[in-house]
Amino acid sequence: MQHNTLNSTVSRLWDAEILPSLSELVSIPALSPVFDPSWAANGHLDDAVAHVSKWITARNLPGATVETVRLDGLTPVVMVDIPATPGAEDAGTVVLYGHLDKQPPVGGWGEGLGPWTPVLRDGRLYGRGAADDGYSGYAATAAIEALKAAGGSHARCVILLETCEESGSPDLAAYLTHLRDRLGDVTLVICLDSGGNDYSRLWLTTSLRGMVSVDVTVRVLDAGVHSGLASGIVPSSFRVLRVLLDRIEDSATGEILLPELNVEIPAHRQEEARTSVAAVGPIGTTFPLASGVHRVTDQDLELALNNSWRPTLSIIGASGMPEPLDAGNVLRPYTTLSLSFRLPPTASAEAALAAIKKALTTDVPYGAHVELGRPDIADGWDAPETAPWLRAVLDDVSKTVFDAPWGTVGLGGSIPFMGLLAETYPQAQFVVTGALGADSNPHVPDEWLHLGQAARVTTSVAHILDAHATR
Image 1: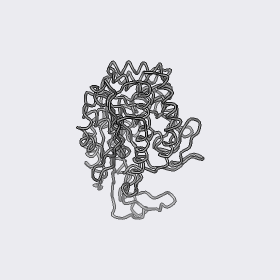
Image 2: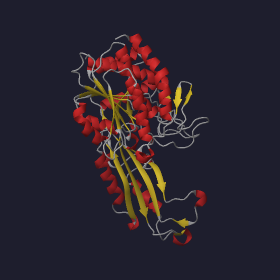
Image 3: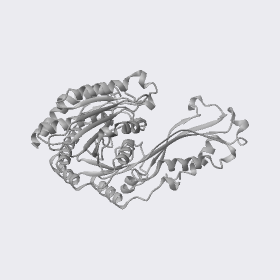
């Protein structure tokens, strides 16, 4: 493989071909279905699918087919099938994964920035979906095109771009079942929906936390009453909810108390976290902490493990409480909180949800009514042992593409696709990587893509594909 040709082709594709099209993709408000129940009628997901499919179809990929796969009532999937180069036909199938759906816009974007307004500034492309992860389909395609131009080899490659990842990938299992025979023997999975702790090396995600979410409502009255007349007689719904949550979480430390949500952290994952912390320094310093607020501990290793292998609870929504300016002296009839749990990679999400339900609904103080709604679960993922050929090419990429050793990270978020594929193809190798950094702002205002890192990740994927085909 001609390395100079590979590098120059990737650079040209990103500058001249990818950036203009990706910028147009940012402008499409392709909200994930959970944020846009009328997604089918609104057509924005279809617009994103059509836009990226048109770009890929125009690439120099002889024999490739670009197809939009649709199952009744489900969000569409883009499937790009690229035949193996001569001599690599027996290397199995490589699945390269990304998604086109987006998180909601949310307010508070910086001056001159907006969710649907692509802005190029200082090597960054700002806009919703640029980094998470509209770039992925472009990077996967460009890696294969550049590899061909440089005379490299690759196995059969299938690019899969789903459109409901930000909703928890509820449609993906049906598509994997539908496409299983067509995918064949999957020997390598490359997921570009991740990232790392800096932009100076290639990062591999070796674990992903699972997730449980559920709404809990505590009701004490059929209608609100004067707080002066009822307080001290009628229990506060908020206080009852506090008591129930204390069964699950130690409010002083954040420790999750239910055994079903905890696991013993593997020794090799602890060692990986220790190495990662030593490579990049303090954890969480890029978060916009309010003045005077500090991290939950000064021990960086503990922070890394908290964010990768320990369960956490976040309250992400509330109902039944008026805005302060609208609040009267009323003892409210109910309180609803949206609970979002992150689970260790190897914990059972189903068992965790059952334990949470039991804790919230058993022996409720004062006989208050508890209602649970919108339960959702996703298991985590723990990567298999890295094969020697993959470790060798990662070492090579660290020298030829980057100037620092590759690193590993346990990601605090979830990618449901990985658990599904790991269960379906237990013998496959997994490369979960990407251009996201801790300060890339996915899901929040001012999301941005580091264009230099995106190009380096693209080049790295090309090297990995070549090594896989010739292993």
